Amino acid sequence: MKIIIAGVGPGEPDLISLSAVNAAREADLILVPHSNDRQGIAENVILQNISGKLKYPVLFPMTADAQKRSEIIAGQIENLKAELQNAEKIFFPVIGDSVLYSTGAYLLEEMQKIFPDIEAEFIPGISAHSLACACAKQFMAMSDEIFSVIPGTAQSEKICAALNSCNAAAIYKPKAMKDKKIFEFIKENFKKIIRVDFAGLPNEKIFEGSEALENINEYLSVLILKR
Image (cartoon, helix red, strand yellow):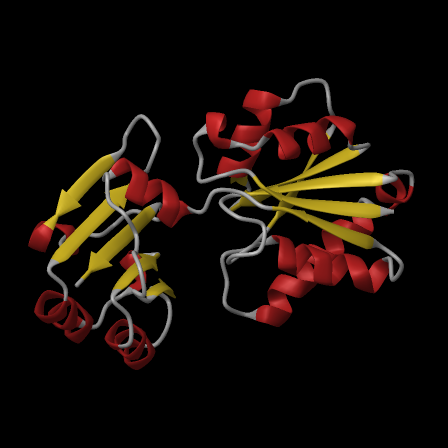
């Protein structure tokens, strides 16, 4: 048994790789991530590219409680055990890249507990910060510049420390940042401040300067910063 965890890009259906499409077509079973019991972006990308395959939803609870998350995912795997046992290749798409902030890690951890001999394969995908920079027509970093990818869910001190040590940065989930000192630090230390909401999607919006740090309410937002 093999599980293929594939990054399918940031949401634009055309940005899925040929490798991921082929792997999905060859799979015996496709698991798709759901959030709050709703169709996820990764599933939508698969639906736009693959037809005629059985797709089983797996709910990933939006919680920081690792034990609760583990129990919910494990319970769903147990419910699908018969179907999974009959599958030689299982395909699991994740938004963005397969190894960066990937829900695939949580699924694989629980799969390995139930199926200790399962093999894992990873297919890379375009990350949200790559698409955000492309949409904003900005190069991320050049020459010996240090580029950092920072989760907005991290502690304020860690975010500022990471920003202090780099020339350019991408902040994921900036809506999670509530500490005003982070925004002050950004204004004081970065000349270029860009926020891209819904990159590559029909409702894409790009904000620059101080406006990029205001009214950050969307989950699909990326802050791009350059000194």
